[in-house]
Length: 220
Ligand SMILES: [Zn+2]
Image (cartoon, rainbow, N blue to C red; front, side):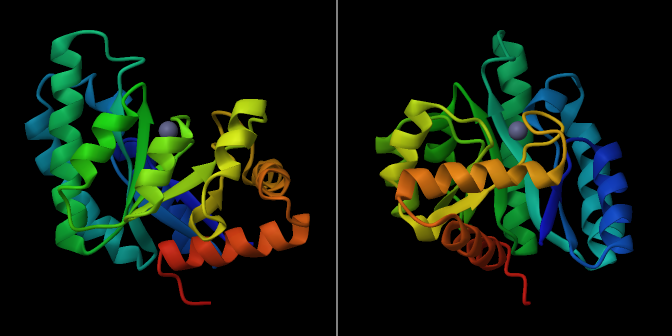
């Protein structure tokens, strides 16, 4: 098993770095999520401090494999000011990912199209976590530098959408503690992929493991 733990705030980034340092098969992504960004009217000042911690202390654990979760969440951001703060934070961390030569893990809610348009202006690979957009946009992203991660949330719409995406661009996630409650809940996401792509479960498991190692450039 390979576990990638994603931070959403400075505190969780620090916590994840400790977790990754203590366990061989655990790696981490560090980032400031859009939900966190909109709580800080002084986001630019905060980011200078938090991004420095990512570049120095957190990258120092040797297990940092991506920048995330970062992105835009228009479900939670209702005002122009909140969206502006999310945007500032997203762009700044995409620049950080480019500087560090790392892929980005992207959280987008009610903002999938805008996120992808922004991402295409950066020289990096990106993973759309918990992707809930439509199949057309998913196909567009995966034809380029986008990858898609499937959460353990079964629906007809999701199976239909996943069935149209290339297997070699699919990853499985638990989204714990959001949708799933622990990393092992990614098993249900693997079952969804197996059903959507009409693959034996074992083959879907192996494919998502290979894809995860490839996307995060983890040598095994
Ligand atoms: Zn998320």
